[in-house]
Length: 319
Image 1 (cartoon, rainbow, N blue to C red):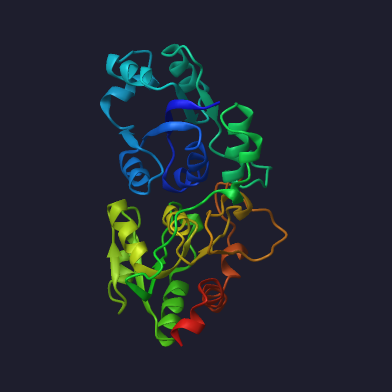
Image 2 (cartoon, helix red, strand yellow):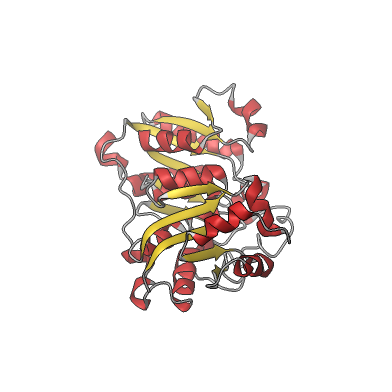
């Protein structure tokens, strides 16, 4: 079952990609080298975190041939260096394109569970890897995976990072409530700071006049360094939240219309905030939130702060 050189191909965004990390870490026991073909920044991130050995940017011109009938000799030569390929994709067309270029079939894995499934994505991926013969059955338990350790003493344990953005506007908890959380943390002697990604510039005009520091980041390496310097994290269901959780940072992640049973970040110190409701999470089945999304509105700043203190256990160390 072991392989010499393994190539992971992933087309997704940051959060989805990070949810594959537990599976890739498990695959390290089966491969001498694991490389990845994905978005350039995501590949660099996986290298920095020690998840893969090398990364190839999916946006490079030579890889465009994978999505067409044209064959690029450079791509073929690269693929031939790998004894096995695992493709995270819903596209059977891409799978067929890869199989035309190789003698051994690729293992295509769905990047998400069926909508009616409550199986966590990380576990879903491990089970698919077992079904296609890439790992043993005993290795499908995600809880046995050794995640990276967060630094024992961050540069500033009192720094708490708040991320009010998300890849979808539907997932955003009201910004006013993040400002309330920041005020509560500051009143307790902590140092809340806001972070935003390149897709969340609409929040800058509101946050800039605030008295709290604001980090507008373009680079994932900067985000990693910032997270590792802090004592905790609070954010929406987003790629940054998945990264904070994976790094072992004490984190509270606010879920709304998406199903945390499927999409919750993987980490040792993560608290998920979502009220108990009769309605099923609708992010994957409806095109818009309802007029008054109780999944977001019923979560209060007080509940978030209390959950953070419980998760990070900061009361004993800071007060």
